[in-house]
Image (cartoon, rainbow, N blue to C red; front, top):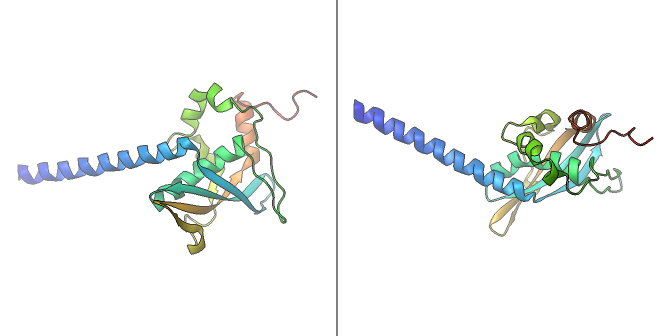
Length: 169
């Protein structure tokens, strides 16, 4: 009986260790901030509907990381427009903000972090066949995401991370 309990414990510990290692790899990919954003359509007032292309060796990791990538892109990069949707500039115009506010953004983008308040998967994590591309040894996965941009801006302003739109007038 003790052998069975010990065996079960070892298996469960192994599974948790593997999951922790997978999350560390996913965070490593996220910290490289390798992604592309394309506008899909104008969202409801205060939101953006975008497709985020994320890279990973495992498609499910790319889907999960797309949420972080989407929020990161809205804060730091913005996106160019197309014939249907105008481009949007980044919420921050400070190229060093991520380095200057490391403590804030480490917590903000942590697993289960505050960034999740501002993002929704519009297709419940499902990925169309044409949005799942094999590129070398990894996948490039396109995920439709809605970002609550105005809520994100307000939260970052209240935290003193970015300046309000009325500052300087």
